[in-house]
Length: 364
Image (cartoon, rainbow, N blue to C red; front, top):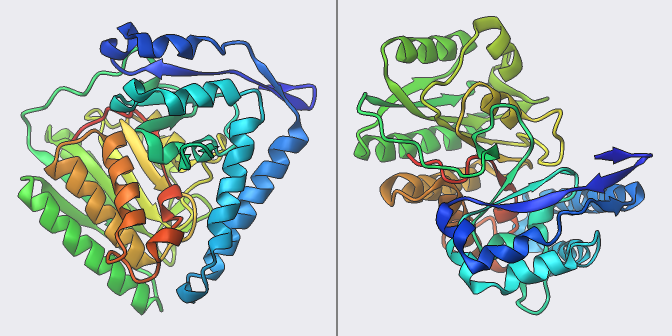
């Protein structure tokens, strides 16, 4: 919260099941409820440093062999500062140390989102927070299902399940479009095995709106909306002259997602996780999405395709919650050298570029 040019940080870990709430493991989580004073210059310095690391990472996409161990070292340095500073050392020490908590989904809510909290790094365990346990970061959006005391999985609906794949049809991007087409093909195969009716939409925002409206009016159960492609200034690039702004999309058409689908924005630079006022996930959560997975930096289309394929493997085929599916996908992208020749596993930072907003317990 803004405070005389600086910040007061309030934070807590919320139980996501009654089992966690009643367990001894959760008791320590109530010990840091007093707002913590944070100097604005520290926040800005950390934010600036983290963005520089991401920019440095982008330089090596064209020449992966030049990717340096210095990038991972810099990420660890940022993580150590988060672990040590801002009055959170006791908080994170307990989080890393408590083995019982690793079996549960945790929803971490912080008032200040400029700090990449998920990068907290413990030198003793040599682990980042996002490698240690399932987690979710929630901004304080209205109507967000993650803000209640307990998050319950959504009950299965008997109506026909629908998945909408939205992608941009751009000009002069043959290589990128080929990879996007490959991603769409892979997703359609996965959706088909799950008996999910797939609606493919490109070229026009009107087509996307019609697909949503028709499915809703027919009582169909929209479970997934997946976007792959370019994202320009927080809009989805459907064609060179057509950019879908979810905020306008809500106001102009009055659409709401009664079936609480998950949204996967697998495009370049979808959002900054620390920017609460200019965030694509905010708009989708506001109109009824259960959860949003977004990427907030430019990554190769081939990598994006692999990430999506593994994510849906866990989310649909293995029926894991969205938080657990995201966690497993992050780990496998980091550990398996065969997945993508663009990144050597020991240097891969793509696992940090996907974030979850909304309900960590949302299921397919």
